[in-house]
Amino acid sequence: MSATANGRALLIEGLCKSFGKLEVLRGIDLELGEHEVVCLIGASGSGKSTLLRCINLLEPIDAGRIVLHEEEITVPGTDANRIRRGIGIVFQAFNLFPHMSVLENVTLGPRKALGTPKAQAAEEAEVLLARFGLADKRDEYPDRLSGGQQQRVAIVRALAMQPGLLLLDEVTSALDPELVGEVLNVIRDLAAEGMTMLIATHEMTFARDVAHRVCFLDEGVILEQGPPTRIFGAPREPRTQQFLQRIVEAGRLLAAYRLGSDRRVAKRRRHARAARRVRGRPAGLGRDGNSSRPHPPGIGDGGGAVSDRHRHGGW
Amino acid sequence: MAVVAVLVVRSPGWDDVKQAFFDREQFEKSFPDILSAFWTNVKIFLVAEVFILVFALALAVLRSLPGPVFFPIRGLAIVYVDLFRGVPTILVIYILGFGVPALQLPGVPIEPIFWGAVALVLVYSAYVSEVSRAGIESVHPSQSAAARSLGLTHGQALRFVVIPQAVRRVIPPLLNDFIGLQKDTALVALLGVVEAFRQSQIEVAATFNYTPYICTAILFIAITVPLARFTDWLIARDRRRQQAGKLA
Image (cartoon, rainbow over all chains, first blue to last red; front, side, top):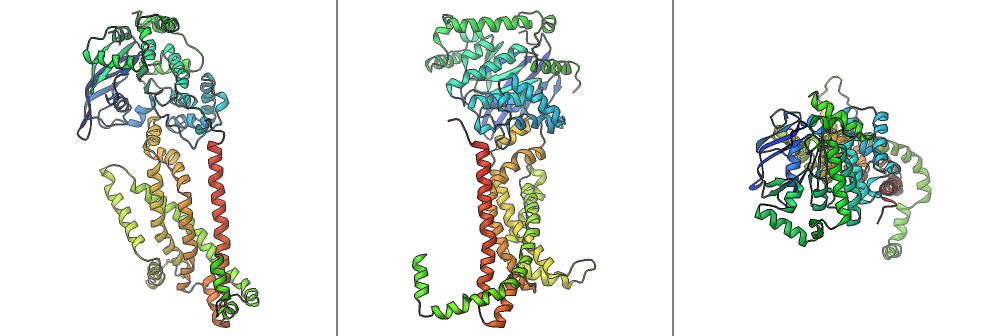
């Protein structure tokens, strides 16, 4: 696996987590390269959300270790607040702050956790909001927005911290079907820009498009992982096959798509592949590929700054 | 209501009662004195309220501190609340109002009004802290998780995310407690402070006419009802701002 071609963003070894007698995670091993997008799939209760919450130190772990940008974050005495500032997480239920306007939601983290001056935080937030088509919503309250808009605000809120790693926890599961697309497009853009992401999702078509690697979680372990084409096209484990079969039956993964006959989807796939080629991953171009990574305005600048920061280990 | 009114008005003793309680002349005569004494109630109420809000919130926050490290602090907060909710307000007022000045400690105030207000603050903080705590706990943990995930500390998450939402939710029950507090300012009269209730007692004793009591009752209502409507308006405005135009 070429996960570390651009440097390693995240390393998880033997991660275990129980809630009382319920063992949710039973030895997770996972590695994530810089600019890599990994999708976690699996049935409800397989531990996807818990894994993400553990990485963000929202849940204390029972065993194992997590290394973020070459710093072990699970050793006792680690400043959890400092670690969390470098990891963005977007929740299934948005979890926006209902008593704050969109702008206040987005600037709270930079202002209070990073100490960014109010005016500067607002300026940066407005650039981000504009980029995600939310410029005119800056003074609205979350309850006045559609689900899709709320989730996009939540993504912007996470991005405002300029995280080196973005965790997405089933971000489209609470949305009406017609609103799913706008959120997935945002994530697709982020992937194209090289944002390192770990995505728990039930959207298999999306996972197939956007992920460099797909991990199938089953009963607290990663049972199978590999490139999306292999996991979706030729899963080896019987349980993976079973799971995907159920998904197809539930209509969440186009059966036709698996045969490659859906033109629209096929086109999207070409896009994703092209984006990956530009980034030099996983086609194996290594570090040179990284420097030719496109830098769109706004978030692209932030992403670049973040990855520089990580390379120098200066945070 | 109408039935009760008719019953009262048609009762055999109504004429006497009317004269004793609803004497217009007496009302006009005693109103200015009672009104000026009522300012004492208002002052006690306003000052005590500020301290109660702060103290109760502090108690509530202490009680919701996580982890075994803070067990002693949580324990103390629990003991405090149990104690001051359990003892009748009137006893706390007597004990503090007569007891503390009698200690003759240098530099410690001996005015009964001061200790009356302190007693009210201590008792009502215990009540209000439970309301505040319920408010804090009613904010879904995911809100706190979202704040912490941005790198905010526990204190920052409480201050900027949890408490602002909690306060909005507890305003109606809080108003309940504060109306109770307003009325209980009359208990300070027991220490010899001349406030509205004591003033009306003085007038009643002088004239054997009970109209001053009605006068005092009207004053209390005159302040609580507008306060209740103001709170309703505040809540409605907040809701409008956050939700109006909500997409279906």
